[in-house]
Image (cartoon, rainbow, N blue to C red):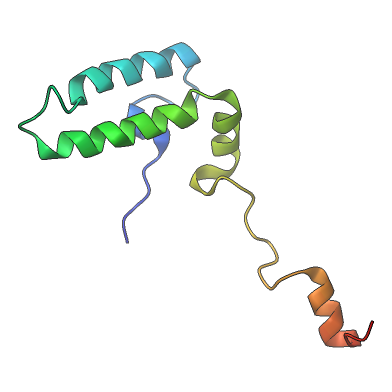
Length: 97
């Protein structure tokens, strides 16, 4: 199973980085890893895509807030994975409606 990288680590910035710091880090890495500049390095394109995806999330205040709160999943953890609460009541008290 591949490990999920922290988006801040991908860009090389701290978690409390400002919007400007994130933008600067992205621009530096994008120039460095752009596929047109790195035709000889097959990994550069994949790394460029990774950096671009990280920037897409961290540059948008709403997406960044959601990422900071919930991480890569993008939403609240499933605290009740067994279905709807009414399903449990149906099991214990009968499903007749």
